[in-house]
View 1 (tube, rainbow over the protein chains, first blue to last red):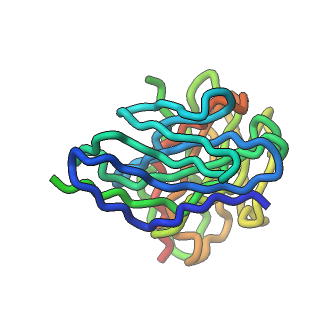
View 2: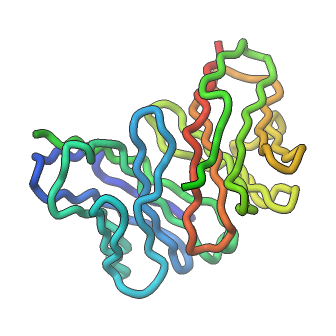
Length: 117
Length: 114
C-alpha cells in the first residue's frame, strides 16, 4: 500500500535558522514526490517536485528537498527561515505504477511550521 | 498564473440535504480531482475524472457522491444526502495528466453539515 509519513506534527524554528520538515514514503514502484504548502483558509500551493535526476530539487520561495531512495525520504529544507514561511506543509507521493501518470496524490498528515522572529 | 476556482467558499447545509460544490479548472487541464480534508486531518483523495468519466475513486466516494462536468467548464461534486461526517474542506484539483506535472488546487469549499 502507498503511504506517506510526516513524523512531526509541528516544527518550531527561529527566523534566520535552517529548517527541515521530514517526510518518508512507501510505494511499490517509482515515486513522484511533491511538497505543497497550505496557508490559513487557502488551498494547497505547489512548492517542488522530484521526478527523476538530481536528488536535490529546488522549488519556490527558496525551498529545496532531498530525495533519498535508500531511506525512502524526501525532506523539505530551507537554509534560512522567514516568519512568512509559517504554514502547514504537506508531502505527497504519486506511485507511477498505480493509477498511471494521472494517478491521485497520497498525502501525509501535514506538519505545521512555526517560524518565530 | 491561472488558478482553479471553487464556489462557494463556505456552504452550510442541513443533514440529509443535497449539496453541489463547483470547480472551474485551469483551461488546458484535462484531469480533475476532488479531495477532502476533515478538520485537523490529512488531505484524502476522493475521485479523479477524465474524458467525462471517473478514472479512479477511493473508498470514501460511495453512492452518495457523484461528479460531472455538465457544461464543459464547471466540474461538480454532488453529495446527495449529507451526513454530519461529511463536514470538511473539499478541494478541487486539476492537472495536465502528465505524471511529472503537479496538480493545481483551488482554495476549497468549507462544507458544514448541521
